[in-house]
Length: 326
Length: 259
Ligand SMILES: Cc1cc2nc3c(=O)[nH]c(=O)nc-3n(C[C@H](O)[C@H](O)[C@H](O)COP(=O)(O)OP(=O)(O)OC[C@H]3O[C@@H](n4cnc5c(N)ncnc54)[C@H](O)[C@@H]3O)c2cc1C
Image 1 (cartoon, rainbow over the protein chains, first blue to last red):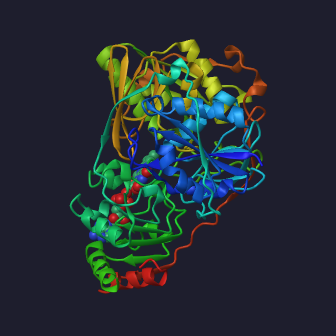
Image 2 (image 1 turned 180 degrees about the vertical axis):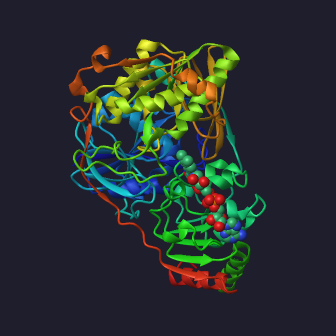
Image 3 (image 1 turned 30 degrees about the vertical axis):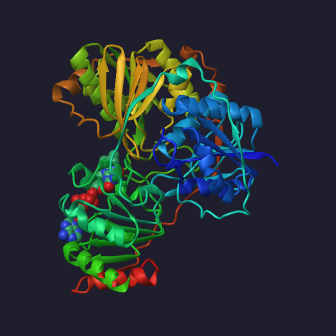
């Protein structure tokens, strides 16, 4: 059976071994890959990462782990990764290549597509055994089925698209991959990485529950209410653009057209009107709940459960009730 | 500094958008078309660099004839001139082909810096900057929230999941910008009038030496098999808070097993 290459998305400090974790989208991709062939994981990062992650990748069916590690990989954004991956694809001739539909994942895929003159499908939410991919377009309003018509299926998979399921455990062998870079691959140099405090909440695009606040939340201080509900539900915090632009919450938590696309089991919108650009980032969520004082707010058109009311009354009461029940 | 800003005309993301029923390409006829919002930030950044360091700003756009309207709009913000790659054969081009055409056009302009938006609101694919960099053999610094130009060195600050990172590259390079980088100016009346007289050059595929069968639907590296509208979500239950809205909300969450 041909290999299916899965590029591993990791959590944790890039460039430093230790503390690596596997992002959920990786496990989703391994689950998808098993339908297409023999999953083989590709790990990029600091030395030792592949060893550290091998067991977890094996649990989800990886029979092999390719490791491309070291400073040449971690110090230069995506170009070296694309070079190594393209070379690996030429060598193993996989049945398909799956990469996370994150900014970096898409960038690696884009470079590989050019190097191999190969088609590329991004934001894939399902993949059939024959390589036909399902994508959602235009803010989730359109469903597209497409195929790569030149080269092999090279797809980026959107987080929270499939349920990761463990496979009969394998102990994958780790194979070091030679990193032979071209002179242009190292032009971009990372000179500084600044870690900002992150807390313990799940990553926005991967979270099962997302609780977002909008302009209606009113201030940065009031966002504590949003955080409180998120923490009680074990979720991530999101924000509308009006909220991030007003400085209530940092930009990286923006959900929508120009922010993150999320597709959690539960999305809670607090003081968000539901503008089309916000909906673009959240309308494929399984269950949507909204609190808004305006009964005409468009968010209610999507909400499975909506409360017309003042969030400063409804939300604290809800928090209290959740505490009572847990 | 010789700066080229990539500008794409897209269907307005605030209006209903569709794929065409005949060839599954983006319906650009029925939608109202606008400049891709993120590109306005790239134009603004280019103008600021020109103000600080001198040089020239050229808009480069690939798109149907109607895109000229968006190019003029871009020019009204202040760039010096524009190049419009327009050719019927380009209709339905995939990202791989688009990058081939834009790279060829960029080679004719030899910029020190290529600026573009981090993504377009229609495709949201985010791959073109790196595809161009790959083809041109230069660095791509993407998703910049801050850009500084110091002689021949470009330095970008970009958001990451862990925080942010600072990345440098020698010019020429491709830099894509996020909407956190600046606040784009509104075109002034004078700018709008001046834009009408600014040079807008068109290039066809033949001018770039690219055979027609390498682009468009004919040369696409992927194909849409079918497409359909997702059934619109229908609203569910809506209650008005009568003092127990929070409790009832949690009752719903509990029934759905979230609590
Ligand atoms: C090209 C483009 C891209 C965009 N990208 C994004 C994007 O990525 N993400 C995004 O979110 N937006 C985006 N926008 C902006 C979008 O159009 C809206 O302006 C934005 O989503 C509005 O945010 P909001 O719902 O928080 O604010 P508003 O629309 O002002 O809504 C605030 C809501 O809070 C309610 N409210 C106020 N006080 C209370 C209270 N005490 N209790 C309960 N409810 C209350 C109000 O009734 C109102 O419905 C984009 C716009 C454009 C043009």
